[in-house]
Length: 116
Image 1: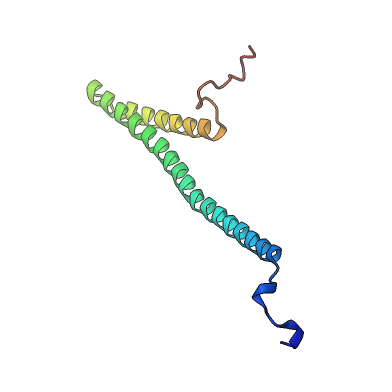
Image 2 (image 1 turned 180 degrees about the vertical axis):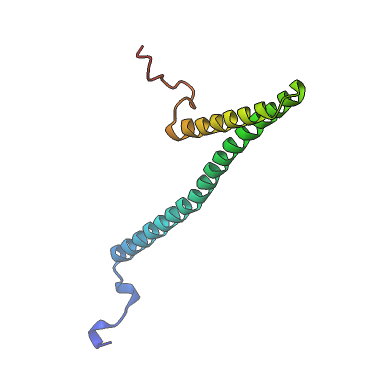
């Protein structure tokens, strides 16, 4: 450093220091916001995947269980087991479609067919 460029703490510009502190704080808070949003995304995605899997499995298991019980009670071939298994799988798929489109899942949703 030359003679004219010596550092003197008494001559430090307070506005420049304040501006640098504000800039550092804003960068720090922006980094924290980015980090928190990244942490939430996998949790939301995992919850969605879990719900989709539950809807499919529950529909198939409940339908198959009722079909098996009917077959045992009536002494038939696995006719009801197969029929209600596919019906339960269809119901699970319908629930996933309703979840994805947002139809019929919220309190007070408006029916699109009814224009009252």
